[in-house]
Structures are given as structure tokens and as C-alpha cells.
Amino acid sequence: MRPKVIIVSEVSIDGKLTLAKGVSSKELMSLMDEDANKYLHQIRDLCDAILVGAETIRTDNPSLTVRYVEGKNPIRVIPTNSLNFPEERNIFNTKKAKTIIVTSQKAYENKKDFVEKLKRKNVEFLICGEDKVDFKNMLEKLYEMNIKSLMVEGGANINWQFIKEDLVDEIHLIVVPVIVGGEDVPTLVGGKGFKSLDNIKRYKVKDTFRLGSQIINIFEKA
Ligand SMILES: NC(=O)c1ccc[n+]([C@@H]2O[C@H](COP(=O)([O-])OP(=O)(O)OC[C@H]3O[C@@H](n4cnc5c(N)ncnc54)[C@H](OP(=O)(O)O)[C@@H]3O)[C@@H](O)[C@H]2O)c1
Image (cartoon, rainbow, N blue to C red; front, side, top):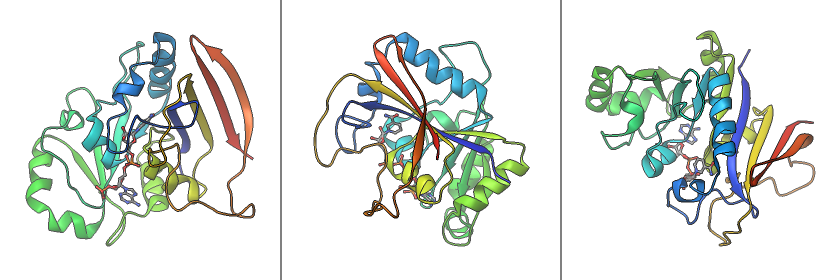
């Protein structure tokens, strides 16, 4: 058993997640109006946990809490094979929300000092795999911890890891009406790509509507 997995992402018309490679998406997200921010935060409130990639933690330093609506903060789940983070990141403040770092046995043992520092801040650890994180195993363990719904908020690499293993039930795109351009700018899904019609992942349109100055597109697994 695994949690229901929902990718929620803010994208430009051309599917970009941010303004340039290695740059925080916070600038692009600043174009989202209040309605869109409320939508995003409502889903955070409805989900038991929220997962983002370690690179997003390094570049964006998000809090991943609920602020635009009244609601509870989801548990923050961050997979990493490197355990390479600056010590001061908002997710390591566990007063408002719980944080679980998911990593491999090897990284956990190699970074013992850093692990101990984070444990003193009440950050929790989940080991899923010997030398790299196994996402299916991670989802099974999260389900056992009573996490029945998981919102995945990017970035491109993490979205690829979930989609390539058929672990995504729904995708919500908040489309901001701007075009960013740029060949190397991250889009919704990174990775190697599927490269053939036999291998691409198929979704059905579940809903589409206008919200303030954005379009919301919702897809579900076909
Ligand atoms: N528009 C939006 O809604 C939105 C949302 C989120 C992020 N973003 C943007 O997306 C960009 C970051 O995306 P990104 O694709 O570069 O990185 P990312 O998806 O945020 O994170 C990638 C990292 O996740 C960890 N990871 C991936 N697969 C793993 C596995 N199987 N096991 C363990 N750890 C794994 C690795 O961390 P380690 O290197 O530590 O091993 C990897 O480097 C930023 O510019 C950010 O601003 C945009």
C-alpha cells in the first residue's frame, strides 16, 4: 500500500518551473495571485505530507507550511542521497511542522555528525535503501506511518523519479500566463525522458478552470 500521490506545480505557458537553471522558483511564483496561492495551500492542508527534492531545499529554502488559508501544516518529506544541505534551512525549524529526511543507509552512516545535528533539532530520518533511496519502499514506509496522501511539489528531477515509476495519481498545474523560454530551464518533468509512444506516461483530463489570472489543469492517471 502507498499514499495517494499528487504532483502540484506552478508552471509558465511553456511548462517552465523557474526563470533559469539553478535559480529559485520564488521569483516566478511571485507572479501567482492570491487565488492561486490559496489553491496551493489548500492542497497542502488536505494532504498528510508534502515532498520536495533536496535541490529545491538548497535553491529555494521553502518553509512548505500552510499560510494563505487556515489549516494544518503537512509533514515535510525530503529525499536525498547526498545529505548535503546548508545547516540553516527553513525545513529544519520543526516548531511548526515535522520534517522527515529520507536517505540511504550509506549516506546516513557517512554523514553521522550532520545527522546528529539535525536530530537535535527534532528532524526525523527514514532509511529506505542501502546506497540510494528506493521510492517505492519510501512510499510503503510513509503509508505505514499513516501518511495516506502525499503532495509532491517538485522540482523536475523529483517529478521524473515519481512519474517514471508510475507513482503519480494526479497532477495539478497552476499555469501562469507568461513565457520564460530557454532550452536548459527546468520543465515540469526532467530526467532522461521516455522517447517513444510505447513508453510515455498517459494521463486523462480531470478538470480545467480559470482561477484569478491563472488556469488550473488537473490530470489523473489514464
Ligand atoms: N515551479 C514550481 O512549482 C517548483 C517547485 C519546486 C521546485 N522548483 C524549481 O525546480 C528547481 C529544482 O529542481 P531540480 O530538478 O534541480 O531538483 P529537485 O527535483 O528539487 O531535487 C533533486 C534532488 O532530489 C534528490 N533525489 C532525487 N532522486 C532521488 C532518489 N531516488 N533518492 C534520493 N534522493 C533523490 C537528490 O538530492 P541529493 O543531490 O541531495 O542527493 C537530487 O539532487 C529549482 O530551480 C526550483 O526553484 C519549482
